[in-house]
Length: 338
Image (cartoon, rainbow, N blue to C red; front, side, top):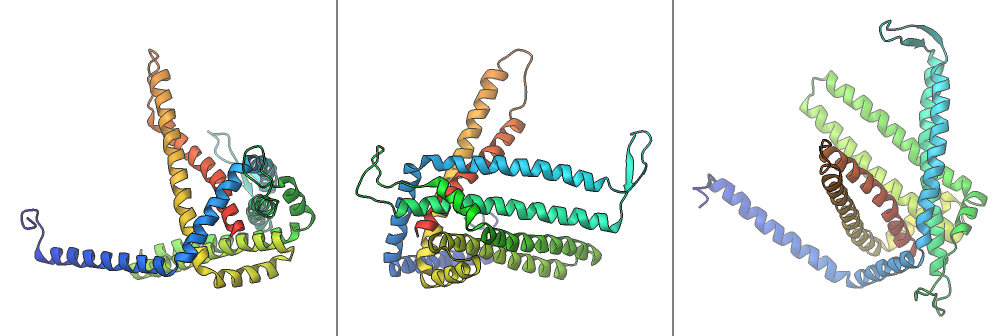
């Protein structure tokens, strides 16, 4: 059969080796699951508790909308400021047919634009951190609230959302700004490295060794980026519960993760699966509904035949972004309860 399909004996041997390797890895995986069965049960209970919190605190979905509007307002003001700085310099005539102008900027003006871009990145990280901190405070207040009295919805517990917003500005504004500064600084360095690496690859004629080295460095930077985001999130959680500064909270959170690495691994793994399925289902079903409306309402009208592919693509992207924003609340609340 393999000979008829065009396979040789070497290919068959490789497929057989891959078959046994997959079974060995599956056996190791189930062995690890069996050895950490207690941690797995705790992780499942934490996911269930986070689901109860999300069902009991539906008003938490207002927080991403508030900070989105706030961030959009800041971004529009930032655009106005960048345009004002970019226009500083001697203006000369450009393309006469297009009636354009060229601005001869000084080196100092270019540095101002660079720091404006970095500042906007820092502000964006700060707004995201404020949003996460409010969710963290809400989940923590719900977890430590009284559970002997059930609410109208039948789920015991109550959370305080607005207290988290007050705490974020009154007590932890500097700590959140410091964590955001660290992330924005690393992202800026990573962006500069990718820019330099792209030019270095072109200068060497896209040498395979250079591209391999740059790929390895990018992989290491990506791992470090994930580690820093995970550490900052857990530092915010410890900071909201203990009231300590960012540096102390980051150190204690790092030690806490090391002591309970199995629980953190299972919780993040299970919640990652649920988050992926939720974002995928929301995006796909929203896109299918939009495609159905286009085909039924618009394309059924005489003389208004349009392609449903491009609108459906935009619907999918927008639905995925919105789903990622709101599903991220579940991720932060699960880590807080853990």
